[in-house]
Image 1 (cartoon, rainbow, N blue to C red):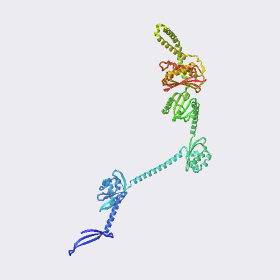
Image 2 (tube, rainbow, N blue to C red):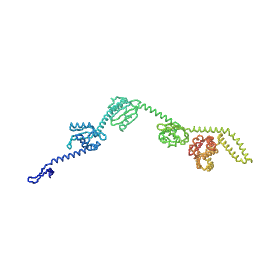
Image 3 (cartoon, rainbow, N blue to C red):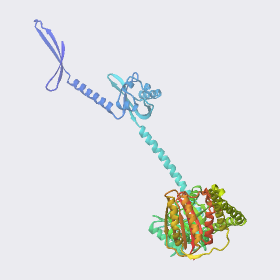
Image 4 (cartoon, rainbow, N blue to C red):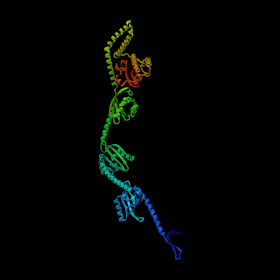
Length: 636
């Protein structure tokens, strides 16, 4: 016997049992029993499709889902979302109990208890721990289901971690907002109390100029009580201010929608000054009064004091200026204008370096004041300010520094004159004491040397006698220079042109430069006649020129200029030597001081003496690039 399923054209399904039998007549026969299974098949198909839909919904659902076998509480199936959130693989979960994958046993027992009592669990909130220790909050629902004749439990989890976090934040924000509102209310009350009791007057008017708030000091200012003012028109209550500066500025503030601050002498209180500030708003105008009577009095005193200081600075004969951190001149007095030969407008705002070349020494000290914030005092000779000596005192300020220039040219000149007079006095005393005593025996010795040189017995020593005579003559010439420094007789001066003397000297100097393989350059400008002694000027120029030539290397150039500057005739002798060492500057012109191997130290001393007899001044400037001697002759 065997079974066979058949379907008809009408979609009917039959299961036929076929059996072979043998009739009494010994004939084989077949017995067929047909059972209609159409309904059963349809029910089975419906169930299959339902299971398939459940499986898809289970696996692809947006929430975590799991199925536990009720008999042993082990996982039969979990969906993808469950594995994703918990961080497990299917192998980690299937066949395990919830406790084995991190759920608290107490939580599991409580859920199962609810399930037994109620038959299902709805909206049960608890915390899940992921494989890596993270905690999430879920809402759990559970139902008993049957799968393949087994009683199982279907769990559905709704992850509300983010929602809980947002709710918590919202609660925290609401709490903070309520706290801020309470603090703001308290702060507003505190502000109102402060404004009411502050020592300055304050009131508020609306757009119709009616008082809406008045503090205690405003009552004193307006000479009316708060009750009298609130709700009343300000112009009617205080008619004295109509047409005044107050009304003008209040209306301006409202019109421009900008705060206005001004100073105002009270109409209601004699000799009381206020600083008034009006703040416009869409609701009206807030007005603040501050009593500045004392401050204004102090300001007037300060202005008066500043005017007095300015007057003193302007009346000074010494140069004074203020310089900011950008080295720009911010103030300069009248003496400074005269010194620079420029107006104040031309000087203010300009940098010092743009106005004149700052001496290196001065620049060093200025930077010292700016960076180290300490006062310095020093002396310099300024070419930019007419080759004058200045004593400069520089003081640091908050904005830069101030400089006080005192012209000490007269003092320096007097010091130089005194030093030179002391030197000449010493020379004179020495000359007066020893000149004649030395010259007389030297003349005798020279005569005997000449006589001995002529005798036949000493012919072999004639050259030695000649050398001795030349040395005696050299000593005699030194004594002659010595006496010329000490002489007190009046020098005879005649009106003549300095250029004529220089032109007369040119061939002699040209020969010297040619022999030494050096150059000379004459630049003689148009100059007036001067009262001069030709012989002495000849000696002065020759001494200075030969000093310059000796200081230079081969191919160096000596330059001699003559020109008129600042009402004086200037003779300039410029060399290209290595300059005078700093330690020797103060000794220049001292008798017997020399750096030459064969020098006497009387050449420059004689030059200073000659300049003095001509009422001329000698200035010099020396650097490693060369030395310049300037002889300034007064024009009569």
